[in-house]
Image 1 (cartoon, rainbow over the protein chains, first blue to last red):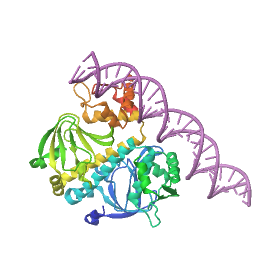
Image 2: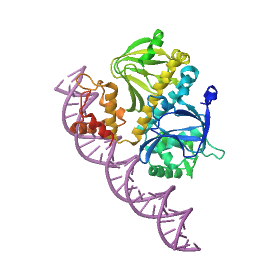
Image 3: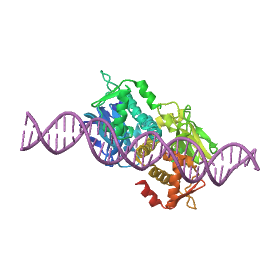
Image 4: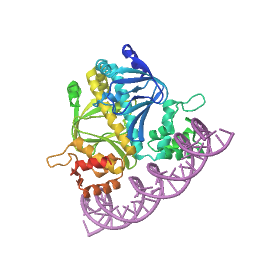
Length: 209
Length: 209
DNA sequence: CGGATATTTGACCCTGCTCAACTGGCGTGG
DNA sequence: CCACGCCAGTTGAGCAGGGTCAAATATCCG
């Protein structure tokens, strides 16, 4: 939401976040809201010791920490940098005060939240009804849409297999087996942390069963 | 959100909805937003011919159709009355215009949407990681919280088993088997369309594994 | 009363998770 | 320089949760 920034420019405070660093952790007290200027984050929710679900990703111009606007005084999710990032921080009290006064800003936030909710509902349905292979295919399509590709055609994000599996709602091992299958079918290849989609149409076909 | 109504009272238009009737269907053009005055609804998303996921329920004072505020011009979900209901309808254009002007109203909607999003994220995680038995237990706890109980201690809603299973993200048949188990353990009984929770603590225990 | 539609149960089996073994670097120290 | 251990990545075997299908039973209605 880059268009929001001008209205808030006076009060913004930028700072850097190192790769792997957490902007905030699930369960921490809410104290502010963030806008990504540079880099990317995963927004995730813990299940047990070594299991989580990645809810979404955030990149330049995206907002992070809006969940702090709800009833809860604690963040219900964590935000972790996937790569070195720069964010702009706003004190929550100030942001809320601004919202109450600036209806145009509030209206933009409403549209943003409605879209987030829509995505979230779709994910719920997919987690309930889609087989794993289709969910994994969908995860790659989603990454492709969100991050686009670089000059060489790789999806423009570096992401671990662990994270991909958490995003698709499955295990590391299952991701592997499906990944080999995809490679063999000439649909996509994952070398290191770089994803190359060979056949987007076929990938889409896998999603649709 | 009953406190919203005064501000909008001039333009509201009430009407009745019969049991089983759909306020709107997934894929239909968005034309307005609704506030439940009486009765209850399920908000659901279709998967295939005979499979859906119930996203949430709505009852007195709840808002329905806010998803129409997003990018999309079509409702991404359906809303179906579980019992005879009365809703208040607002033309979407008017509602949006009001939002842009009335920051206090907009702020309340933001808080509402943030809470919805939080619930939705929690559901995503649960669908991904919870075993079915725990999800079903959670579904009953959730119904209990939302609808409360009547004088006789039954959860104050009439709901089909089909709908319960769609809410828990499982099948009709699996719901049955788990239900028998619950009854045998003296946790809850489901007679007809009436749910009676015998042991809420034990039910909570099942959720936590 | 008969057919249709909803419940209930049982048998089966497949997806995908768990666990553990195997591989291949890579750093460390002998 | 090689041997050893260690960790991440990779693969396979085994198994069980839970979905599918169909049969058996009950309920509803014309």
